[in-house]
Image 1 (cartoon, rainbow, N blue to C red):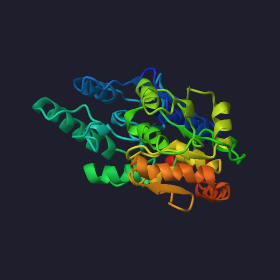
Image 2: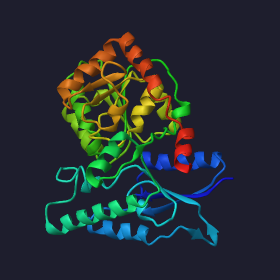
Image 3: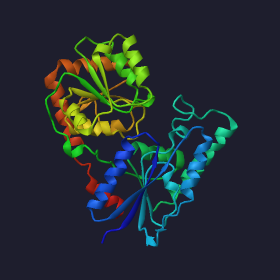
Image 4: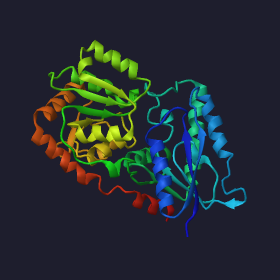
Length: 345
């Protein structure tokens, strides 16, 4: 007999990415396994940082044990601060915490500055996480990288559980085309400036297609013009799933080198399409799948280190195809069957 399950998720208005696809895929798979499932979302804003506590409190005030006299058997929580919700059978599948208060703290990636009131907010976030996550009957994360952060900052043990891409069953190995694909949200953490600066160091044969939208698009377009490579860089913006599938299956390789990524759907999508991945040795969760010389390239996060990889995949088709096809076996074990079994057992 199926359970009545609520998936708890936060939503940043007008932003859509991997976390949203994860929640939708989980709902679809739970339903396919005979459960009755709905998604409860609350909007989340982190600027100014003082607002974070209000949004966290909204989740803490929610009791989803019963709704309209119907018992909810289980809740599955994902991103901060959804796991503060109260329920006797709370399972967490952690996408990530509020990274500005953790591993990004003290860097240019965080909007927390070293003043007393922000220190207090950070302390409160860590206290809330320790309690909210500590209440869970089972604690999973989307990668080893996220589990390691959770252990380091909060002293909590968790089990990595990889989510499949919503494109997984539709990807296939097509021809190796004449462009490097870079699919990601256009923000600073994805480090697309490294790619553009690397392209500027290569010969005219290297061209890239950048898929996605974000606040960095205008700056990146300006950078491409300044580097005099605009004619070799295509910014497509957001594209439909079928278009993205076609771009994956006909790319020569995929560039994906974010800073300490939680997981990275682009990585598993590229490998599922038989494309080698060009990344860096500080890319976080990406490195749980990509091995230098085996199914891609792992180099220093410097344009001068990335540029030779771009040239090599474009000049040596046989090597590129060999690396790409090796990657297929690295993601075959990722399935919704396993995810559902773990989260609902």
